[in-house]
Length: 144
Image (tube, rainbow, N blue to C red; front, side, top):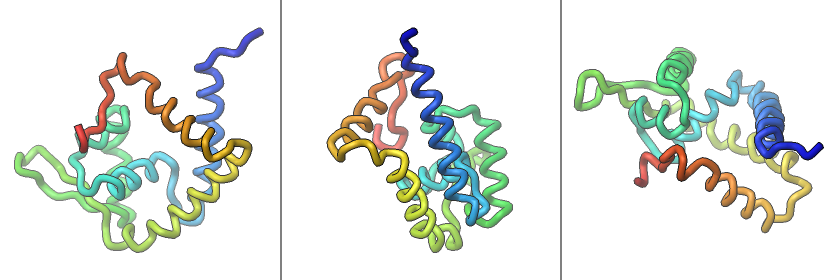
């Protein structure tokens, strides 16, 4: 029986989340929290809405994760121009920890893709970015 593409993607996603969670244990973080920290590191301050839109995750889920990150000192939030808008930013603590975290993530990533050449890794990134683009209207919220 031929495996479905979705099944393969799902299995590799679960494996990568497991590996990332293991790599993040020493920082007392989980992959969902890392995803938000990564967004903020990549794009700078973002509104909560920009974060959940970029991540394709429901707003309440992102809000709960942001609250946990704020309580543990990784991020802080401030009011935006609109009083309902909340802008999220990395804390000084997070900025100091990010190089070590990124190093651990790179190590996990290296293990996961060790069977791929550099060219195949680049091709995989291109292909993954193409998945769902036309149907979901997904876009880079910071770069249009």
